[in-house]
Length: 328
Image 1: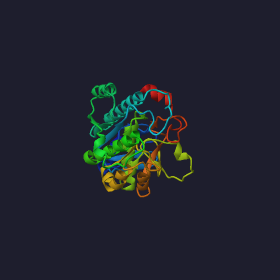
Image 2: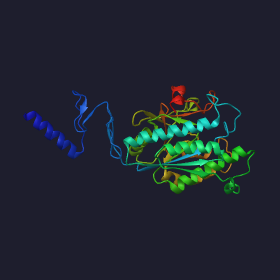
Image 3: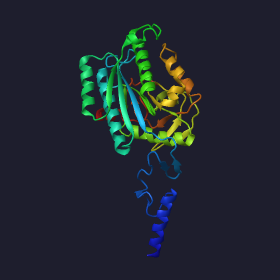
Image 4: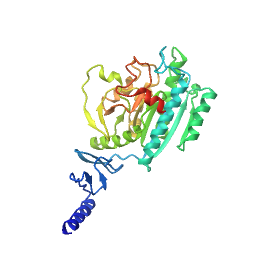
């Protein structure tokens, strides 16, 4: 009885002082009232990874704005190739949006206090395709709005391009960045419409952001995809612990990535210059940011870029492509 009383007092005192107890004999944490194979972290408060211990969260996530770019007619921009599964582009756009909605809903069950909003920047989709997108939106209970891209707004800003597809891509990207700058409050996630996301993607992105950014004591960039090109030049990298997987430092991304409103403001000139012309490489001004700021991607991938099978910018290794496609 004395042992039990002392144990309860010790647990109570530990909670008051902000410490957690690990009882390895019972494979549990009495202070957290959880088994050790459960998620021990508390969003906005602490990240606990065994056996590495606790990270106090100083970079707390309060809101996440998703800017989702759609073009339901162009099969693969700047290429004359077919995507994996060789379906019409609208099917990729719908599955991408569906998987994004599923991932946000999954995250909301764990993080109900985080505010989510999606803005879709649509580039001249046919009415029948827009109706399909709107049907998906109406089936969800998320805050989702559609902004139609007006090419005329960017004619004086973007240099003349060889074809309309390139101009459209630059214009929709610039409008996406502008919307992120105008409406972003905390995290801003720029997403293209040919990525399929695993259901825990958003949860892992948010929780890993809090952990890694708090450890580094600075805002960071995050890419959800483990691209093949990251393994082609034998570039040295650092491995970090996220929420439920490893992350690696990278120096290149495509145009699907997450960052903060403050970094978007800080490097606005880089974001703006990315959209003025078709650069080579396309993301050169974004990649220049990563020489100064930390950018990480997951091992293994949280999002699948559905290009053709030979693309170094496409399919991530060790993903069941068909299963993910059919689930969405």
